[in-house]
Figure 1 (cartoon, rainbow, N blue to C red):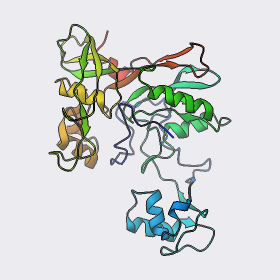
Figure 2 (figure 1 turned 90 degrees about the horizontal axis):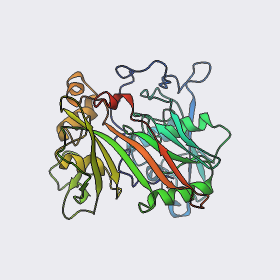
Figure 3 (figure 1 turned 180 degrees about the vertical axis):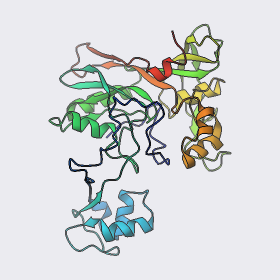
Figure 4 (figure 1 turned 90 degrees about the vertical axis):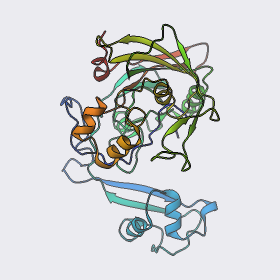
Length: 359
């Protein structure tokens, strides 16, 4: 449903995330701590429907479920079949599924890591809107998030608009502009235009360690590729590597201002291409990693420690910020109505980043 080619992608949703509010959490914001409960305080029931397509007909039921939810282990699939799954006939792990059959998984909702479910709208008309997504709010559901996602909050905020579709995505930790179409036709047009770097402008603001000695706009154009098991990394297929043999990638970077002590700088970054983690890798490769970037500023060991243990006091001190300091500040693209009209949405630098590099 969404285009995953942007610089930031949800690649770390399965981390061991705390159910406690983050330090300094604004109590005026809805953090979703009761989003999984109904009005009477009971857990809501989550349903997931699975339909057998012709190409999957004949598979064992447990193998079919694996094709639909790859992250589930064999043991977990057996548990799901025994306690949560119903279908058009009695279910059994070894039974062969038939094309057109629909199965449903029903389970009580669990408490989810708190996320800021309050967000602003920076552009809106009859066909689309652009929201200012807060950091830490995932775009879509995952193993740990169902109700505390932008997609879910949108459905609650606009209950009479069932065709709302996100037209691209941002990583959970990235804040800023994200476009949503109000109908399927608009979604098709907007997704295509946002994917076309020739007609769409994406400007990000990043706070980095140190101050680059760039007097003008600098083109960061080291090719990038996704790591593999053959690379010297603890997180293959997660870390992106600079490599002359990789895919062409270009980020236009400019220093906006620096902190008084020279510890940090605010960098404006414009995407010319849209590779995974592009801005984060390019800035780190240039010697100025983004503040709070667990992987590219602090390395595999720190990233793995965060995944396994969460944000400990020691890690929090090292990272400076609990999230990477990257903000989608501007999104501009041709309006789906045509006629030369342009959607030009801008989201102000959020307070947590502005404090590091005050004007």
